[in-house]
Length: 111
Length: 116
Image (cartoon, rainbow over all chains, first blue to last red; front, side):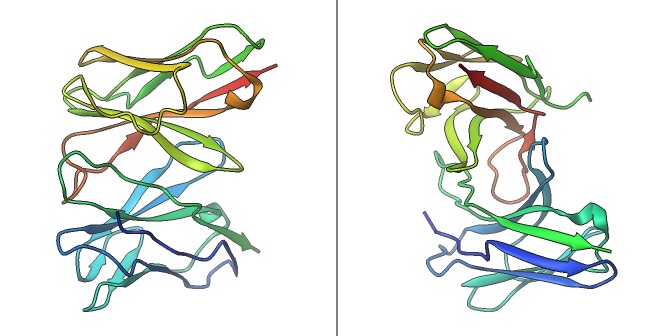
């Protein structure tokens, strides 16, 4: 299974763009990259998923370079409510496997 | 849809007692996952089911833990006997199909277990 590495914590201010980079050097050809968000006292919530290049939805953008050995979650103009833990996961394509969550990145947004 | 439902939301018990956690997945989802979260170890996958059949239980810490899924709408995670180190938040999640390619996991609110 591909292991992911991401910063333990990040700090930001309201209105700024936040970029969280995750490395996954041994990602397999068919694996997807998925990001989840977790607020205190809640279960993780899906944010975005991608395979290559760029994916954008109403919440975030995901940038994946050609070699796919890393990915960057971009949160535009964060607010206090974006304070949460963000998990980067490599979703293995093989049948019989499941998502493995690491420690995630704790994002703290201040006013 | 009501989402993934877990009960109880909070459980306080004494060491040695049996604990049963319950989960109702989203209707129509083929996969069900049980996770445990602690500050020290983060979010750990315990076991997951596909169409009510356990696929991978390698994350179950020891024989004191057992999980069942008697039908598509119900699963239980049992700890017998419970120990203080089992104190954690236990999450249940479900997904429509294989998680790759867009079938995301939907998590329940969790059960906070405290073993005294």
